[in-house]
Image: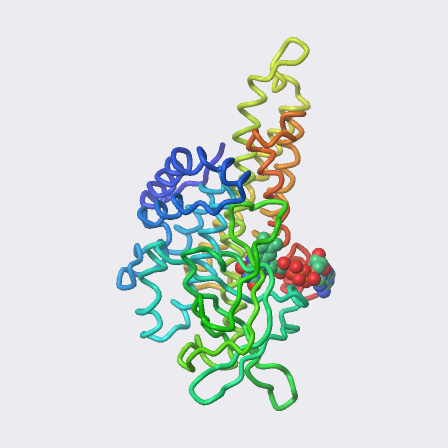
Length: 383
Ligand SMILES: Cc1cc2nc3c(=O)[nH]c(=O)nc-3n(C[C@H](O)[C@H](O)[C@H](O)COP(=O)(O)OP(=O)(O)OC[C@H]3O[C@@H](n4cnc5c(N)ncnc54)[C@H](O)[C@@H]3O)c2cc1C
């Protein structure tokens, strides 16, 4: 395995999370996947370890680190369990980060300490049953009525929205119209348990089985006016910024899965015997492993570059889309090859690669499909 050089603090963090993933996450990953159960114990231990606070300042309970540190942690977790990795990714990058970036001082003080400690989770509700890639088609509305917003509509596929520790969902809603009739979107924080806010039963998914995903509905749901997050009507701009960053984190998650597939396959190929020798002694298998390493390594460099640009305050939209696209496709390819190398055992859930194969596909869909990434990349090429 080839790893890019890291400054000592990042390397220490990565090594610490690698050990945590191996000793705390991996032993229960298959069990939670099979039971479709949310790993509360693991999440609590991740909270104690400070992972939910990685990119936030200390005054809101964070670790004073940065977004790259978060990505390194996500990558190491995803080497053994994508469900746990996406739980962290969505909680930090989609749940807490919008409040940190756009919230008022009161909102940050009220909500962030519980989020950065992992005691509570926030969710991000943009996608709707009728609109995903085309977020301009969202139909949920929020109308001012006295001292409240009244929200009506529904959301689909929302991560971390229905756990026992979910504190709120950030709802993207149409709050007005521009003079030429286009919808103006705002972000409104709806606390869990608010009357009129209901959470549907969990989806039956192909993968990410231990991650919490629900449809949500809002039926004359009233929240105080001060639950608006950021400027009224600026919701799209906020989402675009959050999703650009989120793509780097999803790329890191995909790299972790691609690497996990390689870890498992290397071990298996050196022990599984066929025709009197280890299957890895056949060039056909060795070349698959070499290609898996190239994909994981290249994808890792791509997300490191996007994160470095972001932290330097440079434009990074193009690099984030490249990293997300390449890494998610690398993860799917590596998962397919890992299953192949494991033969029949690769199709059995008792082997981690079977779970990794099921977990890989959604990486080409969530936080912008591969087609959407190609649209962004083509646009940045002037097309
Ligand atoms: C497990 C899971 C968790 C998720 N978590 C969240 C969450 O926490 N919050 C949230 O808001 N959303 C979440 N999502 C939603 C996710 O972001 C959307 O599913 C994704 O953006 C795609 O939207 P869609 O499903 O509506 O597909 P559609 O937009 O309907 O797309 C269907 C297909 O058409 C293609 N397509 C669409 N437009 C074009 C075009 N112009 N050119 C070419 N091809 C096109 C797409 O690429 C795709 O292949 C989650 C999804 C999943 C599966």
